[in-house]
Image (cartoon, rainbow, N blue to C red):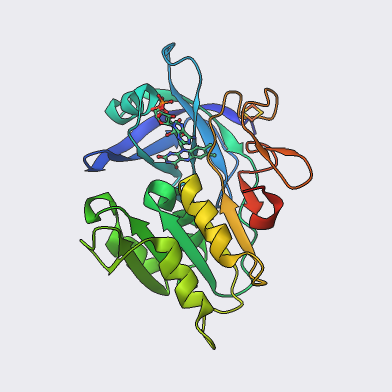
Amino acid sequence: MSRFFKAEISGSDILNSDICLLSLKPHAEYEHPLPGQFYMLQAIGCYDPLLKRPFSIFSIKNNNLSFLFRVRGKATKILSSLKKGEVIDVIGPLGNSYPEPGSDFVAVAGGVGVASLYNLIEKYSCRAHFFYGAKTKDELVLLDKISSLAKELTIVTQDCSCGLEGVVTDACADAICIPDSALNGLPVYACGPNPMLKALHSRLSGKGIKCYVSLEEHMACGVGACLGCVVKGINEYKRVCKEGPVFSMDEIQW
Ligand SMILES: Cc1cc2nc3c(=O)[nH]c(=O)nc-3n(C[C@H](O)[C@H](O)[C@H](O)COP(=O)(O)OP(=O)(O)OC[C@H]3O[C@@H](n4cnc5c(N)ncnc54)[C@H](O)[C@@H]3O)c2cc1C
Ligand code: FES
């Protein structure tokens, strides 16, 4: 089974002003992805931008692979404007995956970081204590679905337009650190902007909590060849596309 294949757009929905849910039907047999893995996507015949872009697997249903992404620049704008039936180039699944949670677990998503964690809470349905944060409620998507898949959903917005007021890392760390908290000792899985992950590290490190983070770096090749995506690990540089994107939080120099 090749990791290079073509796929047809089977659905494309703009969920809010800049978040798109894109579904693809692969033209060939494909390797099934694990939660946390990612794909490189590119519209056929697209030379600007020249490089494919990385996106986490969001969900797999009825032989469709779906991706949830924020429209940021040229590539995401082009991908979000493709119509049903159009065909794109795909490479994947790539990278490692989230370790299997042995029990219930805590998931922490910042903004569109929810894209990487959704497949995990779908696979281990009703086992996630899910903390979902954003600047404002318009940036939160698919709350009904997430609520039905999670064991418990805590929403946090910085402007208090939905759920608790504040930042999601504080809400999550406060809940974990309450003495005798039911969340104490559960592994934590997190994805979001780097400052959010850094904040999570500063709240949870040294507390004996196993925490896995999915990192997002600019990528060129996506397969470990160009060193374009390296981050500083504790002992060595790590390629996010090859050794990651999922790392144990204490492997990374924050
Ligand atoms: C493993 C992995 C999985 C990802 N999964 C998702 C996902 O599921 N959903 C999603 O919305 N995005 C995801 N991203 C980020 C996504 O790849 C970028 O948003 C996309 O490449 C932007 O392409 P563009 O041409 O539209 O924007 P560009 O023109 O390349 O960039 C527009 C702006 O976004 C910033 N930017 C671009 N890429 C990144 C990045 N990787 N990290 C931080 N800032 C960036 C640029 O600095 C620039 O300011 C993932 C990234 C990685 C590495
Ligand atoms: S993107 Fe080329 S090594 Fe990671």
